[in-house]
Amino acid sequence: MKTKSLKQDKVNIITLGCSKNMVDSEVLSGQLLANDIDTVHESRKKDHNIVIINTCGFIDKAKEESVNTILQQVELKKKGKLDKVYVTGCLSERYKQNLETEIPEVDAFFGTMELPLILKKFEADYKGELLGERLLATPQHYAYVKISEGCNRTCAFCAIPLMRGGHVSRTIESIVKEVEGLVKRGVKEVMLIAQELTYYGLDIYKERALPRLLNELADIPGLTWIRLHYAYPSKFPIEIIEVMKQRKNICNYLDLPLQHASNSMLKAMRRQITREEMEELILHIRELIPGICLRTTLIAGFPGETREDVEELKLFLEKMQFDRVGIFTYSHEEQTAAYGLEDNVPAEEKEARAQEIMEFQQEISYRKNQEKVGQTLPVIIDRKEAGRYIGRTEFDSVEVDNEVIVQASQKLSPGDFVMVKITKAYDYDLEGELT
Image (cartoon, rainbow, N blue to C red; front, side, top):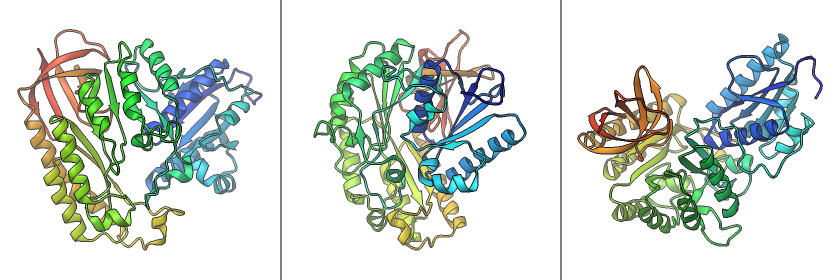
């Protein structure tokens, strides 16, 4: 590829949004490197001449961050500090024509499934044999593994199908091969991600095949932890929990986004489940694995949400005692089913409700953490910070959940598994010492 620079091209990939985007960036990095194109991720050295921005278009805040990042990089190009700026990802998929008009300084925009077209800009070829060959943007001891793309659900608030298309599962063989390769590179924990894990396999195997996939992955030598993210609650295949119970290297952890607990809100959101059915599912899961960690995600301020709905949600949280909770404020997205509804909860009120719910959950989190004081738990070490080691239990995923501050006189390395006796507990973190 010819640019104004006389030096060899160096590409910096900037990733915004979720872990699924991160995997896409890692795959792109691997392809560029395989074509002898110097590539880095989130570089701070500023010694690159080309930038590829992998954008998020999920909600208003994410879109704003993506646009601001594009404008920042375009400004660097105007100052002669960059030769090329390319944009890919969800925002580019959804708003390509608008972006091309509003930010013409960008050299090219690409959709979410246009990796080969990006490579063509570098006169590079897509190498199908590079399955799983990624430049990991994560530390070397854990990695995200995407088992499917897109979503067939019709949730009223969600624009993901507009940006990622319908559900397409990868084969079990391809996923197992990728994870085997990651383990050989030193990965000890994989986090299985998809827009919707429980739908996995229906398109290619005509059955919900996640339990079969989990058994195959659990057989891989050297893979210490397997973690599940984003499982849709409606028609949940309870066989997943049976496999989790049987296989020791599948973490007793489940990310189960519920979005709300008021039946009127669940119906308006088109979640295909009632509060009573959700409670029954959660109780069943906990009967099978009493110590399982359940994480959920909620939405505050959906059109028509009342104070009564908020109070019902808080009662639900008190009753269900989730270990981890995250919350978004509702974003009014065009072309979604909810866009036809009046966005009648003011932005300030959405934020206030989200804060109120999180403060309510904070007390639950504190109580549940206090129960762990005195327990000895296996912990994976992630990093050293300010002279202390920071790790996670099997009940904590990366970035979104609790961490464990580990006091240790001996030297530890990222990826080490150690036994830690919990000595202190805070709202969202634990502290302990090696045993």
